[in-house]
Image (cartoon, rainbow, N blue to C red):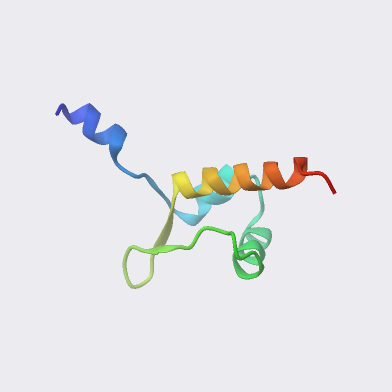
Length: 73
């Protein structure tokens, strides 16, 4: 397997700032969503003081929000 193929198959981790950018929300909203929405992606502990989020999970969450918006009331 080529190096580039390996990179494409690997999960990418976004630090909180990048996750906020992907979601298009401010820091306060991001942490409120994390605290109150059970569907919000769970953070991955990278070290004692750092965490991140799988980009695929952030994308799935955005899709979930879109589907929820489009669902009949």
